[in-house]
Length: 338
Ligand code: PBG
Image (cartoon, rainbow, N blue to C red; front, side, top):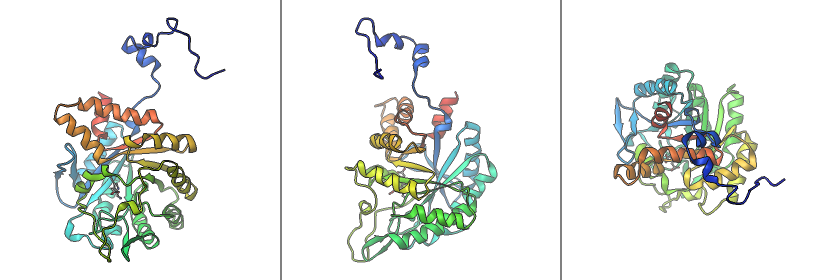
């Protein structure tokens, strides 16, 4: 029996099922609910809220504001918040010393959010870029971002986050082998229940632009030999698709509980392939540039911003995502609850 049986026109008229809202809802294949959303949030070391100019509607939040936001997430039915730090430029250095600071803004934000709304999951980025003055995700030596020494620092950072109460560690650095080393370290320290969502298929993308403003990570620096280092030396080549399956396979074998594809919409083909190949919980990150494109076009009156937001989130579900990391989370959840 073929999976698609089609009667010829006029016996079959696909428009019959589209004639009214109720028929469309009745045959709808996918759903979108607040439970599908992970709220991408930036926290800063100061007080109050500071708007991010390239991401209209997104503010950097103080620790206090982040705690209030966690309560808001709970009220809206958003299951999880992914928190990213903005660090003052003067406090960054070549080795990203503050990445594992147990009194730093991430540790304080995680504790404040878990105190305010323990039912809401908290996810932390494991990577050095918010803390390094050169803006790279790892340590630089001999003009390269060096893999194994970076992993040692990532483990310190991840353990600090787990200690602070973080539920999900999300390594976004793209060093080879870091999931296995991190998992082992978590087990050794008794953090058996701390989950890992690996940025498994993360591409070297132009769509991260506004995020660099959001976390105060400026132009990428040079290595000691003076050549600019490209994130393409560790993030994936946008021309590659098959390679994403190898990256995901590696991370799952090393102990990732969930995997992520990043960016989102331009890489939905990758999402679909990963879902079909592994049947593991697969997430997509609708990144800062995707958010900026929709809000900028909306602000110009060129698209219906709210519809474009909801349609883009729907696309992730249709592609097979378990959920979406998005800056739109509170807005979309409010719309869904309305
Ligand atoms: C880096 C990191 C980036 C993002 C999340 N973690 C940027 C990068 O890899 O350069 C991007 C998020 C976004 O654009 O919304 N560890």
